[in-house]
Image 1 (cartoon, rainbow, N blue to C red):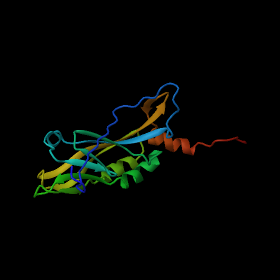
Image 2 (cartoon, rainbow, N blue to C red; image 1 turned 180 degrees about the vertical axis):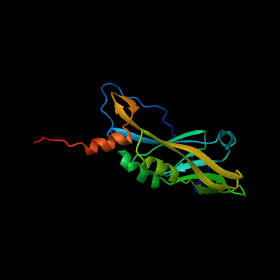
Image 3 (tube, rainbow, N blue to C red; image 1 turned 60 degrees about the horizontal axis):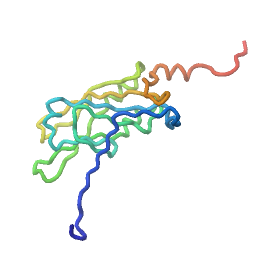
Image 4 (spheres, one colour; image 1 turned 180 degrees about the horizontal axis):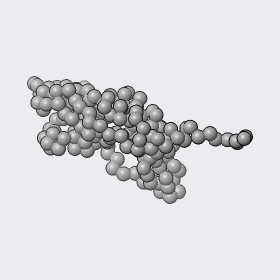
Length: 175
């Protein structure tokens, strides 16, 4: 390696599952929200050079991808976290020397999250037309809440349960 010559280094980190030891302190956030995206199978199989970037974190396009929404602590904060996420598909440019970025439209998922209901929200999100692929890419996107208990991740609170908990009067009652 010659001095002054820049070299690229790619590092990938993937967390498949997390469990805590019985005596470990609980995580600082009791609830975690994750964005899961499922790519079309035919694109995921032939995704040579395609990447997905969420909030600056890049990963190769695969059929199943996950990104933790670290700034959301409750369902009410998830829509804003998704708006600020900045999710992109990166594809090789026509000349093959560079890559181009195409922003994913997360607005259908943001609308689904904003409605009440269960502990999972899902919608189809799309990219604009990507010349390298020759089409628009549609992903099935889901946001799920998970809470920590005794070192395990359990289903998180539902959006309706959060609203109910905020509306219940706490304290002494005088009749």
